[in-house]
Length: 367
Image (cartoon, rainbow, N blue to C red):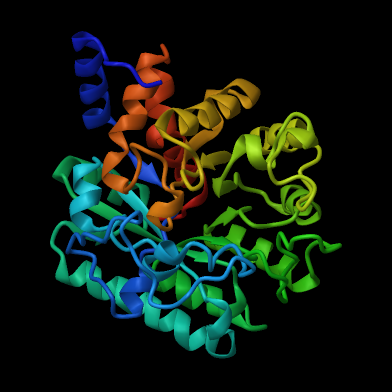
């Protein structure tokens, strides 16, 4: 249970958060923006899930995502916006370009629409800039502004033409994963109950080109075979942009709520390999009970591989699965408070909030 912070600890938490470079490694806010439902500069209030009545009957045998009508309807609307970034003290927000299943037949066009909208939001909001270099992030911190970091969540939009990576790099792309949970031409994702392989030859070429360009490789949604293959191939540190340590990297597979649908074996070994690579594991907020549950996951990774390899990757998508006290990105200071209350040092807290991700950016980005 969360307790009241002593006044000196509360002051320390506020001062630490204000001093920190705070980076959130994953948001899907560009989906509702591109769909025309919301704009980055406006904070939107959405209905209380307990009071929300779906517009049609929800049957008990429906798939799980349909049984969450509020989240299915609103997604991450109301959880991310420029006013909420500023209220949460964010220095930079990673904004994912994600092509949904029903858009895969027009993947490149959909991707370009989302990229265009991100550029438009940056142009129309003075306090928001596209961050493409470490210098950008330091300057934005000094100016009290927020950076948007463009990321790809899967590479279907490239088709079989890797020269498009160069084009998107010029447009601001600085982070990318090979897959979402589905299989594509680059690799296998985290399909439920499906026997999966690793990277294709095209996927291997994509890893090499991302290293050459200076695009951070994201291991999120990649299956275990591909995970090991990327770590063998890459010359640069990687990130896991949004994941649960205890859920997907448990010390014992049976301790995970995702076992046995997902292969969560070799958890400590996989986390150790990520640390050896110099990478960062960004803990997501989605599906946790409350702030302290999220911080339990952060401390699990801290205790397993040390303070140099942990970050934040919120991935909020609907109030149905949002932790109490972390319902939207403006509540990130609650994580700082919890870490202070648990006795974590200033150095460790600053690394978790964004210092570790900055180190990866410094090592990988070319600008």
